[in-house]
Structures are given as structure tokens and as C-alpha cells.
Length: 247
Image (cartoon, rainbow, N blue to C red; front, side):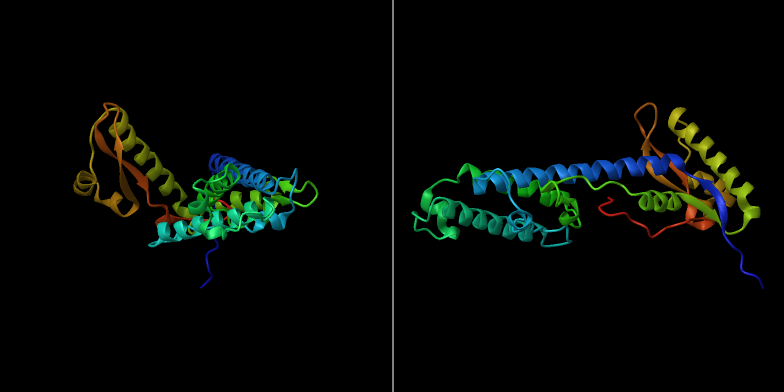
């Protein structure tokens, strides 16, 4: 028995364009946050420019883990603040004989340079980049957005290329898409309030291929929106792909 090869059902160019744009925006946001942190490090060291290792010591991230996330974040914030106080005390020439971990209590205030650095770190930490080093330009000695490469664009396009195992089912899938569009037009625009239970009763043949999610109709009332359970009939041409720092 020959193995059926998946064939292209549709290429979702709009999804590809939207995802590439979102990736570019996310990387630009990460670069801006990292660059703000670099500027904060410059002020802390009282320099016009710093090298990457000067910034790297503050590139510790809590990460978004289940359970214990806020405790981990608090611990790291305290460490960042302590390290920043350590630099600040050195910049003061060591005249203040205070340990960095006790500096805030001993001084009774947080220096502007230390506060600015902790604030900048918090923004970078929330963005949660996979690898800040990739944003660093050795030539410019600053952080810059990482361009979306041609390879990444191709892989994202492949991810949005939907394949069908049995080509003869393509007309069936297109009909299902049309029926779902009609159901949604009725529910969302004309407030018909068709439910999945009603579909199960009147059109049981559709049930294996559709699902619903909550939505609001044109009158602002709760209803459901139907969508195709694509995994039953279709598959992505590149399902496991995720570009660097892609959400």
C-alpha cells in the first residue's frame, strides 16, 4: 500500500504577513528595552558607553514559570538592586563603608541611577527574551533589533501552508468552511443564536469537524462563534516551528 503524500490545500498569506509583522514588533520592543537598560548601566557607571559584560551582569531573568514566579522575580529584583548599589558605591570612590545589601537602609534612599537601572531591568524581564546577546551589535556597541531572516520568513510561510492528506477531501473542507462562515454570519451579524447543541440535533454530520468559542453578537449579547477543527482534516506544513523570540 502506497503512503499518501500531503498536498497543499491553502497558503495563508495574511497569517504569514501578520505573524512576521508581530515578530518584527516584538524584536524591536525587546531591543528598545535592552537599549534602555544599557543607557541605565551607562549612567550607573558614569560613562558615555559601556561594553557588553557591563550590561550582562544585569541580564538575569525570572522567566515565566508556573508557581513561584513572583517569589523568583522578587529575589532577582533584590539581587539586581544590590549589584547596582555595589557599582554605585564603587563610583562614589569607596568613601561610604557600606555593604551593598544594606545600602538602601543605611542611606535612607535609593540613588536615581540605581532606581533607573532596576526600573529598566523590570521592563526587560517582563519581555522575557530568549537570548539578549543576539540583540547586541559588537560594531555599534549597543542593542539593535534582530532582523527577520529570509529563512525565518520561509519557515513561517511553511507553517501557514495548510496540507491535506487526502486531496479528494479538499472540496469537502471548502464546503465546511463555507458552512461555518454562514453559521457565524447568522450568529454574529444577525443574532440568530445557533448553538452547538442545535447543530448536533439538526446537522450531526458537522459535529466531528466543528467547535465553538464564546463571542459577542451585533447587539452586544453573548453567543458562540464556530470554527473548523482543522487538525481533523488539515495539518500545517511546519507545525513545530517557532522563530527566535516569537510569541
